[in-house]
Every structure is written in C-alpha cells, then in structure tokens.
Length: 251
Ligand SMILES: Nc1ncnc2c1ncn2[C@@H]1O[C@H](COP(=O)(O)OP(=O)(O)OP(=O)(O)O)[C@@H](O)[C@H]1O
Image 1 (cartoon, rainbow, N blue to C red):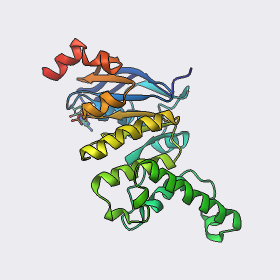
Image 2: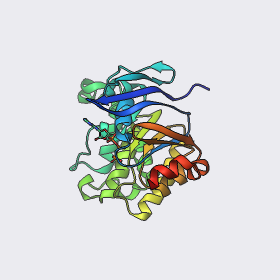
Image 3: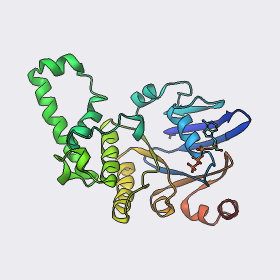
C-alpha cells in the first residue's frame, strides 16, 4: 500500500541551528499519526516543512507517491494535504454553517461567475452543499449551533468548527496543530472520537499534540522528536515504555 505521506530525511537549519535533523517517517492511509516531543523539539518546524509553509534545507516530502517537496501550501492543499489554520480564518459575522460552506467553495469548480448568475444547477449545488455542511457540523458536535454566528461560539466550539471546515475541503491528509489546546475535558473527549472517526472515514490524520491523553487514545502511530531528531516511533503501548522517550521527557 502506498503511504499517504512519506517524509524522507527532512532537515531544516536556521543559521547554525538544526531545528529538524534528517527526520523520516510515513503516514499510512486511514491512520492517525501523532508527533510528540518536548518544547522546542522541532515539531512545529517539521509541520511547516510538510505543509509547505517553510522550504526544506534537505530531504523530501512525498504525498501519495508524488514528490511535493517544492510545492507551495496551496498546491499541496489542492492535492488534499490540508492544514486547518492554513485555510482562511473563521468569519466571525457568518454563521457556523456558512463558515463550513467556505471550505466547500475552496474546492468547488463553479467559480465566481456561475455563483453570480446563479443558474438552476448552481442553486441545486448550493442546497446540496448546505446539507453536507450541516452534516459536517453534526459530525463535530455543532449541529445545533449551525445558524449561530461564529463569534457567538466558545473557543472550543470555534476550534471544532475549523475542523469541520477543513473536512469540507476534502482532505486526504489532515494536519492538526495542537487541536486540543484550549479545549475543556468534554470537548477534548469529543475531539478524540472525532479524530478516530475522520480516519475511519478515509482521511489520514497527522497531529502535533501535548495532551498525552488525547495522543494515547487516538494515535495508531507516534513519532517522537527531541532536539530535531526522531528518537522513537511506534504504537502508543511501545512508546510509553521506550527508554529513550522516558529519558527525553524526564531529562
Ligand atoms: N524561524 C525560526 N528562526 C530561527 N529559529 C527557529 C525558527 N523557528 C523555530 N526555531 C527554533 O527551532 C527549534 C524548534 O522549534 P519548534 O517551534 O519547531 O519546536 P516545537 O517542538 O514545535 O516546540 P513547542 O512544543 O514549544 O511548540 C527551536 O529551538 C526554535 O527556537
């Protein structure tokens, strides 16, 4: 089976500092992979290399077998490699459902002109998109908030709305940057089951997360980085007992 994402020897230097040092790993289709590591380990930089926000100093990134190392974030997004915050911010005055619809329009080919002329097929498509947007809101647990303005949502609800909108863009791989940050216990538990559901529905998930409870409950595979290097990789049970991982967290 072709890996969804293949990172080969990814390296990033900032002046004399090697923030990411020859990191290699794969993300399998329909799987959840978590990147963990102490503060400053290089997790965010690694994410930036994968999404295209930063150019690599060395190494390659392959998405569905295609070398996308040099592609801009927009080109990668068009292939289905989607990072939540890389999409436009939430529109506070628009309702939750309208915000999700923005996600669909990022991939719809109808264009502005047909939206203005609004022929019948466009109106039919809009009705369908409205229905699908509401389904996605149900999926993330915001079904009852669909018609409320985004500005009226709690912080945690806003984060979940971002996930719904990213899903509307049709990702094959969803990159989530500390998705549990700022969520309360209920929201975090909901997020964990949502992440599992997303993977089972066919979208691979790659996340950076400090919340170990969420990581251990959602990840199939964990990549541990420390001082820019990958020091371990494996299933949660193995990582929990890995001496190098324990040393990195205690040291
Ligand atoms: N643009 C930059 N210029 C110079 N150094 C940078 C830059 N971005 C990150 N670094 C350095 O690279 C190293 C890795 O940082 P990074 O933010 O990737 O770590 P992290 O694992 O995401 O940390 P945290 O868990 O605290 O978010 C750090 O030493 C950081 O200071």
